[in-house]
Image 1 (tube, helix red, strand yellow):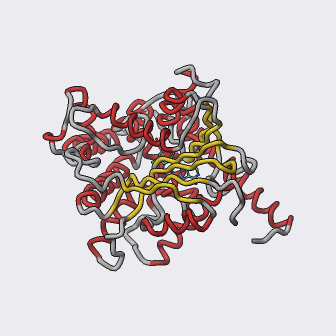
Image 2 (tube, rainbow, N blue to C red; image 1 turned 135 degrees about the vertical axis):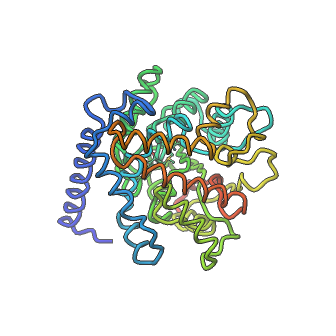
Length: 385
Ligand SMILES: C[S@@+](CC[C@H](N)C(=O)[O-])C[C@H]1O[C@@H](n2cnc3c(N)ncnc32)[C@H](O)[C@@H]1O
């Protein structure tokens, strides 16, 4: 690593520039009351030119090319491309899924929101989060999991995110739900954390670190900011041991997931295990929670199979996320875009999300992919690295 002070200064100036540019752009896209509207109402009030630019910035890396050069460009531009991805999909996610942007297991008779909350409680339990612990949520989205885990445990959480729009929403909701004395949200890149070393009692990440160009990079940063003896628990998105990148069918599924979810590169589970070990973590538990015989599979909301819907209260959510519901949304958004009501590029985004849904369901059915590879890891009390 280059420790020369002039190059360190250059790096921080360029990251400051990027940070300011991204913050400015989010304001252009969403206006002065950024973060206060939700779902379709937020989508329809976006600035047209800025939306067009955000869509172009996101999609420029996913032009169908799967070669190593294209992959290298995606890895290098991970921060901007992910920032752009969430600038264009956040309202769709919130409209279709709610305020926690992750999958969960389902039990018979359990409704969608209960299952999402249980998945969050389980991670908090695995991380051994206690009342008044200082906890870091890496890649916190719009703060759905942080609000739930704070209510569940009474801990204090700092949510880290590189997307300004999501941060504005997370901050708005924390205040709205009177949790702002326990929750705060800060802008930052999880590959370059600015917290002091040994700051947090616990760290968790839900379906976020998959956006890192290297897992070793993000896990190394988490290791740094965690106190010795502290626990890191994560639901990681990985390709399973069954995945063979030289198999074109497998690669197509991974590419659909990368494209529709703004992920520079999907890694295999073994890469995540090696990365955790390499940065110094002691792995306490590792379990693929998707590798089971659940009667209701984790990917059911994307399938369009009505037989899986558990409660009447889930019908609306299921319809929005199902195959038919997505087609209706795509058709509606295309029409609204044509008549100038929805901002330009919105329909293109719904097509990319459609590809993601297909890749996720195929990957789930074939057990080539999991969005819930649980790792519980400890930073040893004695330094090992
Ligand atoms: C699928 S969302 C999950 C959000 C949240 N954990 C949840 O479950 O609701 C992934 C999150 O990772 C964040 N993210 C992606 N790349 C990041 C980076 N380099 N630094 C910080 N956050 C990042 C995104 O902005 C987004 O909030």
